[in-house]
Length: 462
Image (tube, rainbow, N blue to C red; front, side, top):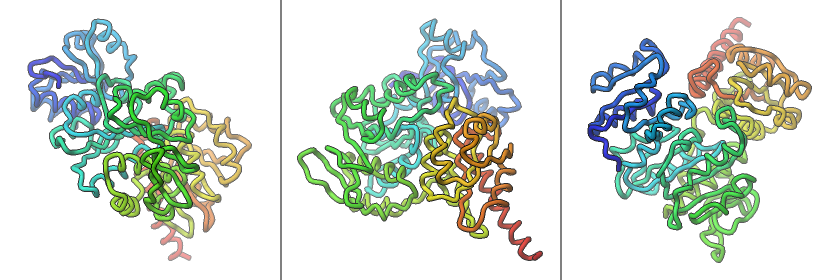
């Protein structure tokens, strides 16, 4: 554990994790300062709680002297590490860590850490449900729900912290050491921040960098990038595959999810694939990864089967919203990269009216073309990336430029026919028009559900 009492610690960025870090550090007796680029007015909701406990606040910009007078700096995931003030602090030898690393120094019990380009939230939530059903003291957090630092007070020696971990969080780890690490997949994402695919992969691999031979690493046997990671792991490697048997791990065999503990052991049936309540092959993979983690934690087959069968889609992940005039609306606002959007499209046989756009992440939208031609009737573009998307997929599908999400919903509702699908799977981040992907998804649902009132009124008028 770090000695925090009387230490001068700067927290950079006042998002959820930054605020939670500042409060935790103050409770431990540290002299805490927070620094955020936003104005005092923009931080009006956060400031009272901080000032009440004696945290000093620097708002409206970062001061170089503020960064030089610290024993430690804790940086929030949303703050780029190449910020000039942080670069200068590191140059002076000031330790810079993230909220995940801070929390890991104090968390008690076991850690299950889940990362990947897509599927993290669904798999994390599912693992949490399975572990709880198995009677394990379990708490869930990280890039989903509560910041990891908020889990510290309730952590226990015989419990599990089930954590969704992003590449932004992995950038700043030093000693973070999960007992079980799960790498779901690696596809291009966040290249606007990480610079290259090589850098992105290297950052993702940090999740198992501190593991030992006593720990477990769960890898996707069907993903090219994750296949290569086994050679660099010091931990025990288990695999999952929806397409073929694996030496040890979970896979689909004769329409059932099965588990093989060792190369020498026979496969144990866990549940029929038909009992998985989530759409798409990618969600079968998520279930397989969760089965691996649960079996490695000692949870019984019967508990796993019942927990998976009872699980429902996480909000904003291929979430069914409504059926209006025979048209089904699905919210996959968490599809913030091209690969996630491809998985969302592939979950439906066709007749899709697809809403694309937002803030570009240096993505290649031409990869969508085969699926667009095969399954999508119309694409409705929104946000800052609309022009790039339209340029790259032009000719593959009819495109309607809508600018805003509300207009896209209206246009799609007007053109979709009974039996077709309206799907929000934007392939972009949300920060051009929304606070985050949750805000975007909530707005989509609001606009869709408002259509029910419009349709009811139209029917009455007719």
